[in-house]
Amino acid sequence: MAKNKTPHKSQHSDQAKKTYQTIVVGGGLAGLAAAFALATNGLKVAHLAPTPPPDSRTSALMTPSVKIMQDLGLINDPGKIGVPLEKIRIIDATNRLIRAPEALFHSSEVGEIAFGWNFANSKLSKQFAPLLKGQKNLDHIAESAIQMTRSGENWDLQLSDNTFISAPLIVGADGKSSFVRQSVDISIKQTMHKQSALVCDLTLSRPLEGESVEYHYPNGPFTLVPAGGNKANLVWVDNGDILEDVKKLPSAEIVKILQEQSQNLFGNLTLDTGVFVFPLSSHHAQNMGCNGVVLVGESGHAFPPIGAQGLNLSLRDVKDLVTCIRQNPPESQKSAANWANKVANAYDNCRAGDIRRTSTMVDTLFKSLLSEILPAQALRTGGIWALKSIPPLRKHAFRLGMGSA
Image 1 (cartoon, rainbow, N blue to C red):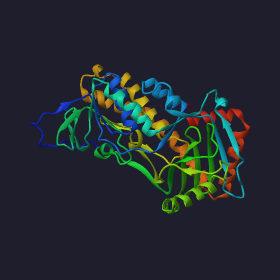
Image 2: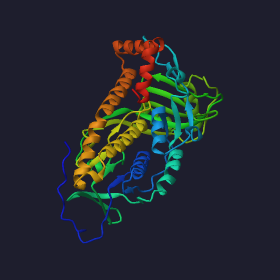
Image 3: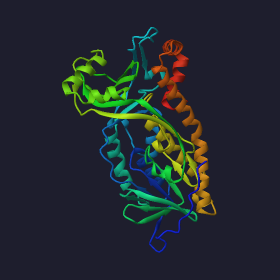
Image 4: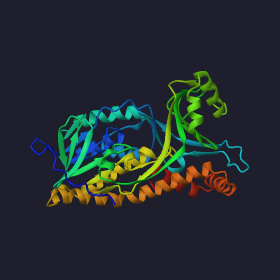
């Protein structure tokens, strides 16, 4: 269990300290969504978010996640800022003894116009940011937190400019190395993978036409995601040292390698951006909420980019946090501490099943792809055959992967 921090007799007792109902820590997409959602649900919110560096990544958000954003009022028409993902093609490129068949799946099979949409993270940030500025009961503070201590019914946060703010409920949406999580001693179960992910943007000779193409190689998938027209976002998972060596090559050599990995199915490729390599790790927190503190997004869970689960799961965090607050309104409690603790405990219970289910799914997919053991390869091959051949199973798997099962 997480531990209560012992209250400090700090030096700020005589300083002005602004108090809120909740403080959201973190300026990424999960933090922006959480701050906006809580403010629009009537809470007095401080959003603690220094200006983040540019985010060149993209996020494939499944249809249920897009609906969450629409329900929260964050977006209207996903087609205006995203590219629909209408088909998924899986190609076994392993050259193993037991190989899976090539499989193509259509979103129409689950009654959707698209499995989801591919969004540039920078476009989502530009969409979210003005909405937050329009909230009268939301203060944006472009500082970081340097200390967090318990004081009566509230948590006190000391900021990088040596000012102080206070609230009974703290939302940690501050990433894998979460300051909030560490401040309240919530432990995580973590796995560091030998794989990394190489990402870049490409122009293809022929368009993907709404089709996400996954080549399954022995050390991870090589995935081309449609980004509109002849554009594609590449996510290539492989051993970290291999990808670091690729990153150091001249652009022409990088393109040649990417051409080979894509099996020349899309003609000549053009590199539109720099190449970035991110080490991969997995973790999930022991508690998603306790003692008036809740974790949202990568502060509570992180996975390799398999099955497009990262931001999808984070948006479900925000949705469930809003539900818990609606079910436990602050005015119904005798004290702020009781309210915050009730929300945190309800949220922890609410999120446990989804996170456990998603962790198991991603871990199973990742291990089945990487395994050199013949029985595991046979199971994976049989699984893809089954998905390809049995419509009810395929439909259930799609719903599970989309986060709606």
